[in-house]
Amino acid sequence: MFNYIQIFDSTLYPEILKLYQSNKDYFKLNDTEVTFQTVDEDVHAKPDSVLNENKKYFLVTDEFDKPKAVLDYLVDYPTTNVVYIGLFLVDKALQRKHIGRQIIREQLEKFRAMKKKAVRLGVLVENKSAIAFWESLGFVIIEENKQNTNGNLVHELELAL
Image 1 (cartoon, helix red, strand yellow):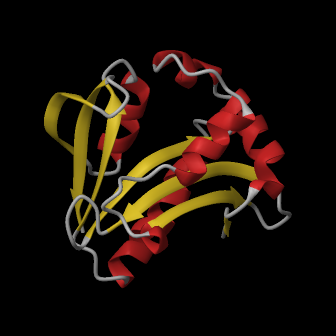
Image 2 (tube, rainbow, N blue to C red):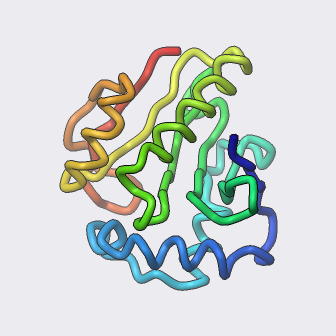
């Protein structure tokens, strides 16, 4: 249904930046300026304990290669057999049209096929619509008001696969 273009270099940064810019409200929540540097940092950010091959950052497109979303996750983090979604952003103009839900459902099937046991993620406490989105997909809050690496408060959510 969707194409997942793994990002290794800056070739597609302009398309990713446009998608980021469509989500300025999200970036205001964590007080982040949206620039090419922001994109580059997201593409490469990972804890030191994570192997390079376990860091995945994708531009998600439709069958006509039109960008729809970005998806960033870590495999086997924070523990073996867990996938940690670090960022999932759908183009603002496409939100509330079930595209995000379709993308995540595809990914959950992929993670199940990889024999992963759970998917985790952190959502900014102030991002009520994102919390509702993830909960509607079956994720549950396992830890409230946790400080993330940027110093922001997040709720940690998990879905058993």
